[in-house]
Image 1 (tube, rainbow, N blue to C red):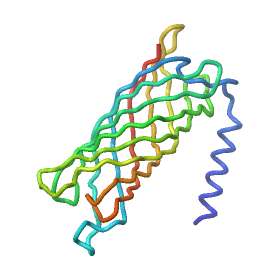
Image 2 (cartoon, rainbow, N blue to C red):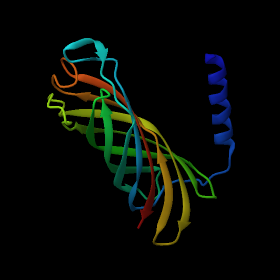
Image 3 (cartoon, rainbow, N blue to C red):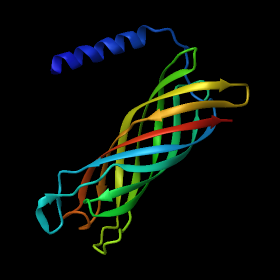
Image 4 (spheres, one colour):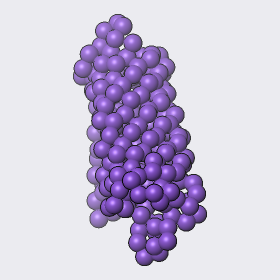
Length: 201
């Protein structure tokens, strides 16, 4: 099983780097902003506070994101600040809100003439989980580290404006401080899927 996955990844990478591309992929070539949908998946192996036999559980979060960013002209690098919101079912009993933001570096790996752009992003940020309808001190703040792939399709480019459909899927680790979700802090693995439209200017 492991060998088959390794072979498949090697084949995809080989096709990817053998394809024709622009010499210097640099995204929007300047400032850009975006809006879109977010689907958030969260998982932790930690046990609920006071209930040692029951794990903290999160339902899939549904929400939105907005971002601002800058792609450095003539390079493959950029920086962006996404702001995220998701509504999550916590422990199958109450709805809570999660707010998050981060500073992400963007590395544009490859860009095709048809407007397709593949990139990597990674960064650090913060996260806040609100109190639900049950007064159980759920509200807590945390820090996060993320890294993952993204893909954009630039459907319009002029001398002044660029527009793209964008999909980012960063893998994220969040640490929530305090005895709120579980004892002595809570480590959470998150998979935010951000799908949106970006406009560069």
